[in-house]
Every structure is written in structure tokens, then in C-alpha cells.
Length: 466
Ligand SMILES: Cc1cc2nc3c(=O)[nH]c(=O)nc-3n(C[C@H](O)[C@H](O)[C@H](O)COP(=O)(O)OP(=O)(O)OC[C@H]3O[C@@H](n4cnc5c(N)ncnc54)[C@H](O)[C@@H]3O)c2cc1C
Image (tube, rainbow, N blue to C red; front, side):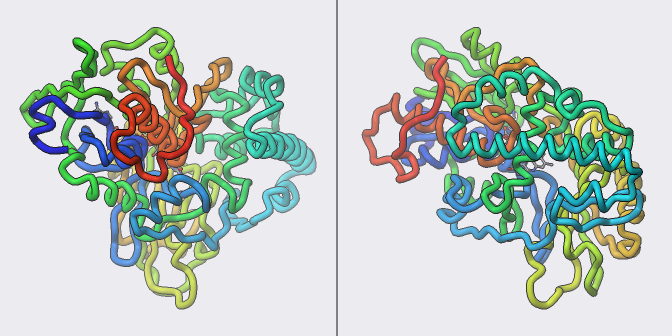
């Protein structure tokens, strides 16, 4: 995009939001005149990591999808590298003891529970496993043959699906469900099942790898390649169609700028999209209004231990009953060969407990989290060299019971296209990137392919038109 293009109002497309959805759309359209407007002072949205020597602090998304995914292709195209994770992704700390178990079906037997708790846990676990297997089979068949069962799972809550459980067992499922930033009694059963399917689907999962150097390297690399066409500190306040052109108003510093283009891709969260887009059709407005988000409160921890640590064999540890729900070890993917000093951990809590802890200041959050971290891993005491806190609101999308499933990938409303992770059952980077790609394809279709599109564009569009 040249300054002249912008000044003459001849842009092909403006992208609102520099998260992975917006950047993927802009990346796919980089052979056109494109401008990305990002409100904050960095690109990546909910992908945030910061380098610390050979480690990195991670605050947002971290688990990348496996081979053959769109993100995998983008990572390779930008010369980056994903790494497999040797540590257990299904470990649990329960009442002061860490169980680095890889086989989740063993938990009802291994945890210190009463007989009735074990039976209830095993029953609920079996029911969930059956539903997850069906979900994965249906995904492998392209989602066919599941309408009746899906409708039922969309109508009830995840808590209703699990049925009544003893208090301690219920606590375990609630803690796991909050990875979707909501309580089990707020989300549709289908969302809870998808969440477990993500974790249990092994190397084919949407979440199975880390990015060497940290998640943020991908959006940063994309933005660098886009150069002047991608701008931070540019908050879009209005998107409207005037005289056949899309006009975007944004604030940068103390300046208000109006710029027009043939198309606009709005890749900001659904509630922002609904607020800024002034010319919006009722079905699209209704869909955007139906999207729910919950918060995450994350703390990244740089550690300074010199020797092997008890968390070395763990990547993801669920911590029911603690101030945080999950602990992640982002150094796991580097633990091959000689054990280097130091490391990087992250903890977070999601949903209503995140919202209430967010009312505390950073120092208080840090104290609460560290107190529990030392209870989980006492040998960590004395080895915390840095902490960093991030309040994510929105943290992730989830669907409430009775809310219709999102349309596939993206929505086109005249010359305005909507993209973002909220087109998925459960927000994730791959879904967001695919959504950005679908919106880019819709723009390409509308503009006509006067110039040769990149290889990744040469597939049929999967979008939905209002
Ligand atoms: C703690 C945490 C852990 C997660 N873990 C994983 C994981 O392991 N794996 C995974 O796949 N996913 C994970 N996710 C989810 C994943 O991060 C998101 O689904 C994905 O990054 C969303 O991308 P997006 O582009 O749709 O939205 P966003 O990343 O939210 O990007 C939207 C962008 O729009 C910008 N914006 C907003 N308003 C305006 C405006 N008015 N003008 C201009 N710009 C605006 C925002 O600043 C933001 O940069 C996690 C999320 C969190 C918070």
C-alpha cells in the first residue's frame, strides 16, 4: 500500500484488527493495496509472548495445531519453526500432590477419592470420552450425520450433560471447563465436549505444538513483511458504506483520519465489530450479538533454577482448587539433551474467578498466584526471577446453550467482511486464521483476480453471505 493509494482513496481493502485473523487476511491480500489498522501498540492480539534469552514469557495463546494446518503453512512460509512438546499435557495437581499422568482415564483410580467419588468420576469420564470420540469422528467426516445429537448438545449446558457429581469431582470438571473462559453451567455441552476433544485428540489436535521463540513471533513476522501497510496505535471508531465505498474512521494519536476502500475486513472481536460497523444488516448484527466472551487472567513466570526441576516432565497441569486453573511449562519444548538453567512457566484462571481476581492490582494478583505456585511446587521458591501479568478481556469465545452454531469461517455483508476466532465453537488461532483467509478469499472473488493470488488462496471459499 503506498501513501498515494491511501491519499487517493484507492485502497482495495482495509483490515480492522492486527490479531492472527486480520494479519492472515492481509497476508493473503498482500499483492493488493491493503492497510491493517491495529488499535494497540503491538500486533498479535491474544498471541503475546516476550523473548527472554533462549526462553520466552508467554501470556496468551501458546499451543499451535499440527502438520497440515493453515498456521503450520504460515509458520513455514515465514521461516519460523514449531516444536513438539515432550511434557505431559494432561497432568493434574490434586490437594497438594502432582500426578503427571498422560492417561486421563486413570484419574478415577489414581486420585485420593472415596469409592463413590471414583465411581461418579469414572462414569462422567466415560460419558465424556464417548461424546469426544463421536465429535472427533464427526469432524473427520466433515461434520456429517450429527445434526440431531448436535442440536441436543447445543440446547443443554455442559454441567447438565455431565449430570450431578460429588463436590470434589465436580471441582475437577469445572476447573477443566474454565479453559473455555466460562463455568460448566454457562456453556453449551457441545463447547465443553469440543474443549476436551482438543486436549485428547493427540498429534492431530488443533493444539499440539509450540513456536520456537514464542507465539508472538508469527504475528510480528507477518507485520514486518507487510511493512507500512500494517499500523499499530490506530483505533477504528467507525466503518460505514458511503456512495458505494467503504469508509473507515480511525484515531491515531490526537488525529482522526478517514480512509476509504473497496472492501473492509473487520477482524476485531465481535462486540467491537458490532459497535464500529454502522451499516450492518440485521442477521449479521444478531449473529455478532449472540457471541459470548469470557476473561482470562494470566501470569508468566521466568525461573532461575539451575538443575532438573519437578515440573520438567509436565507441559500442562490442571490445578483444581487453586487460584489459577492451569499451569503451563513453556520450556518443555526445549527440554531435550542437556538441561539448561532457568525456565518459563505460565498460570491462568478463566471465567468468573478470573473476573473477580482481576479487580485486584498486579501486585496482589502476583502474591495470590505465587502463594499457590509454591504450594504446587515448593522447590520453585527462591527461583522466580520475573513475573508479568496480563488481563485478557475478551479471553476466549464460548457458546451459551440455545445459541445457534456460528456460520462457517466468515460473513460477508456487502463490501464489509467479518473475521475472527468467534466463528469457531471455541476460539483458537487456527480458526481465527482460517476465518481471515475466508474473508480474504471473499474479497478476492469480489475484486476479481487481476493479479495472481498466493498459492494458499487458490481453494474454494467457505464463507457465508448475509
Ligand atoms: C490466555 C490465552 C490462552 C490461549 N491459548 C490458546 C492456545 O493455546 N491455542 C490456540 O489456538 N488459541 C489459544 N487462545 C485463543 C487465541 O489466542 C485466539 O482464539 C486468537 O488469537 C484470536 O485471534 P483473532 O485475530 O480472532 O482475535 P484477537 O487476537 O483478539 O485480535 C483482534 C485484534 O483487534 C484489535 N482491535 C480491537 N478493537 C479494535 C479497533 N477498534 N480498531 C483496531 N483494532 C482493534 C485488538 O487490539 C486485537 O489485536 C488463547 C487465548 C488466551 C487469551
